[in-house]
Structure formats: C-alpha cells, structure tokens
Image 1: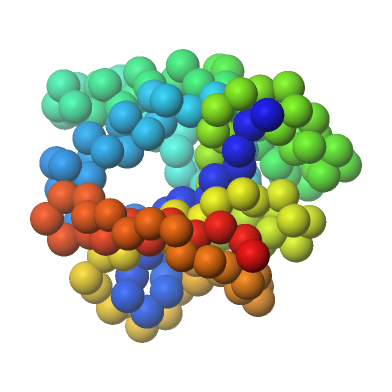
Image 2: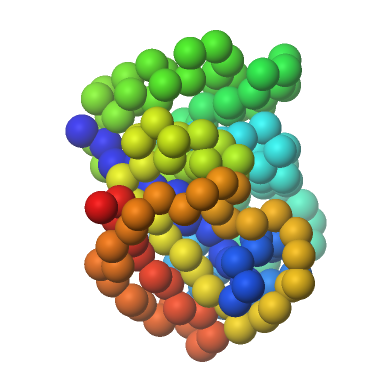
Length: 176
C-alpha cells in the first residue's frame, strides 16, 4: 500500500512560494532523488501547470536540471481539476470522485505518492488520506501568500527533524 506525502518548501511564517526561496545545490539534489523515488504524484491544477516547465528541455539547463526533468517526466502523474485540464505526457486528468481515485491509487501502488499543492492537500487532509507532512523550512519571512495548510491544521505528531543543505530544516509529521 502506498503512502501519501505532502511536502513543500515553506517560509518561517508558513507560506509557500518557490520563486521567493532559494534552492541551493544540496536541496535541489534532494528534490531530484525524492522525485526519482516516487511511485507517482498527484497535483492540483495550478501546481501541475507550474511543474509543466520540466516537460521540455531548455538550453540553459545544467546537468542537474536535466536529471530532475528526467525523473519528473518518468513518474506517473494525476492532475486533479474541476475544469478540463490539459495534461502532458505520463499524466492523467482526474475529476469527479477524487476520494475514490486517491484511495484506489493508495491500494494499487507501492511506495510514496507525492501530493502537490496546498489546496489539494487540504482537501485530502479533510478526507484523512494524507499519511505524512514534510515541511521544508527556509530562513525567509514572506509576510503573505499561499499558506502551506490551506485550512485548519490537522492534529499532528513530529516524527523527524532533518537538515537539508545549508539553510533548510525538514520537519516530518504524521496525523495523530
């Protein structure tokens, strides 16, 4: 049975915005290894549209960027959207009964399935489907934006604290 994991970079004041937080080489390698080891990812529409950046090679990319793109392209993706989302290679549009779809993925797959997007994570948290939360704390204060927890935070228990790179701390929590 697969484990659903919601993890994102987060500011000290609780917001997620990858454009305002530096991803150093160690953290980028961490994300590449993480993505390469996933059984798949479930995306909200907006997060998926952001990640489509990795669908096509770009001449300015480093070898590390190409390695991440290859790992991202290889994994199966499910895109949850109420609208008719356009999905790329190795992706499936999910609409309708999201709970049944996600429960089926958990039963059919082995390993970790990443949940990407705070709003989607909030919906899946409300259904009791997320098994683990990973907060990658960056030493920045954004003062506003999209919060990591889109709704009330579920009761959580801290199970691990890890340093990732020079400035980032990963806090791992499980629902109580």
